Image 1 (spheres, helix red, strand yellow):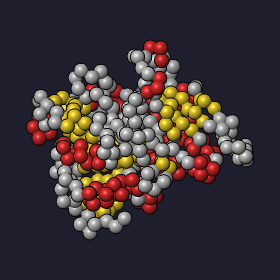
Image 2: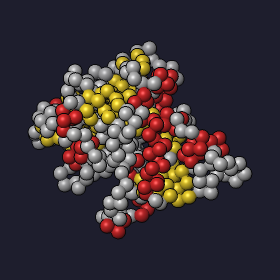
Image 3: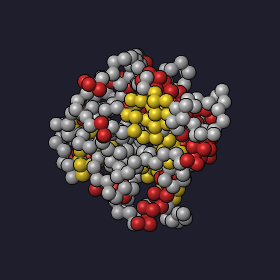
Length: 397
């Protein structure tokens, strides 16, 4: 559709380390010229919606956003959705692992305050008792191995966890996440994100940068035999490695019998590939930390089988270590430094990202008194992601 002449649309400021293919694919855009981000006209929203789905990430620099405006913008992508994507989390009584990371804004409970350090400014805390003590999650609390204190002091860090914003139980993944930067370190020395997986891969990023990768690129990079697996696979989730991609298998997982009470019907199983609602492209959208098993369908009847065909008869892959290893091998190429856009935040930056088309991870580690404050909003969807069509399967098997 035609873009209003009042809106300026340009590519993200890719660093020199990024592959030219990101720009060629149009991954991410910067939009300026919106008159009032809190009160979009129907025409403005339609234009933004038609930018988000093809480009994955839409950045609005230097906008004045309110919690109400943020909820309205997020809700516009799925008007029947009203509940935060993870349900009742962020409150002191909630026994969620997310509790140290976020707090509900009282006037807009689906908007969360996230960040690090003691935050007292009233325009940020919006009625929460102050100071609000926030904790920036880092690889130090999630990975099996961590960077040494000496290397951390020298500016080395890791991705925290590559993921989709999704509960993966009872609630369906949000269509969009909005993230509004309020307070953060600006202009300091860069950090080096290390992969520490034997490849020597590293990525330069600002402290607390949010890293994004394209799920469409993740699928595109797969060799043909793995593309065939991807179009035939459904991922069953349950109620990290040094790259922040998935989990290390050590046989330490809690058994189903030892989990808190759960309902089998609420366990989520989604296609490995999710179809873009606007472009029809297939996006590799797997939350690698929550995998329980993989359901791989057999190749369609009449399909020629070659020595390269994987799982031609199909399989329910319940060996967790094998399932994780397979998904890791499929996702790892797309998080290589040349395919990662790590956004360097400035106050009043607003980022929208297509949560069903990109994966993201935060980076860096903050000291307890270092301040970082954002509002985040995503809403549990009213529908499930759509997987590959019969035509898609026929094309890639």
